Image 1 (spheres, each protein chain N blue to C red):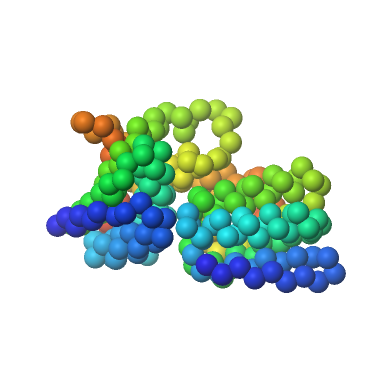
Image 2: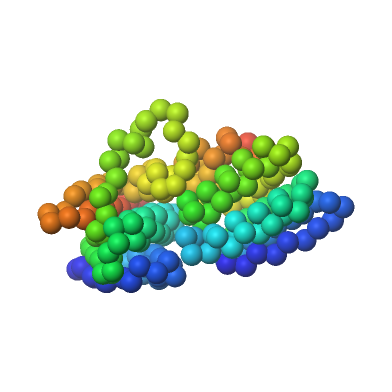
Length: 134
Length: 107
């Protein structure tokens, strides 16, 4: 099952998306800690996407797709150029925005990918899988 | 997010509650800047009532810390939240900021 949303690039809506993602994570039966992690990760990627959209001067909304089954997949599509994740591994870089958000996100989720979209823009996709029950 | 500052004997305590994110963090930054420009020598940011914080909130704390360091003022972050401590650890800020109670002792 996938839920898709078009979000106007207004920072007030970042909270809305993270609450929705947390509900989706609950539905996917993720643990409470994973739900908290998803809350942070989604805030980070949506806030980054809004900033990228503004930098690109794009007026259209950011698209968010949330896939829910044994895992939760969140894809965020914007008009920006994306970020080369290799910058996160450069030695001696200070924890500053926006790389700080990506650094945190990468540490929290099972998988994080950033890809260029055909026709411009980028797609950030994060995945968190249900932990096997004890 | 709600920010409330109290002062006792020159020690300012900024109590933050609610959700600190890209939308609300600027208000916290503004309050820390205000205290800094007023020359507050000792500032503690109390995060114990924070329900949510992300990198934008952490960046504000880092900014406050750096500024205080430059100006030789005291800047302390107070939290006992496992959640907040996890993010401070992941981001590398646990070693940069002065956090109390000391996470090692509290453990």
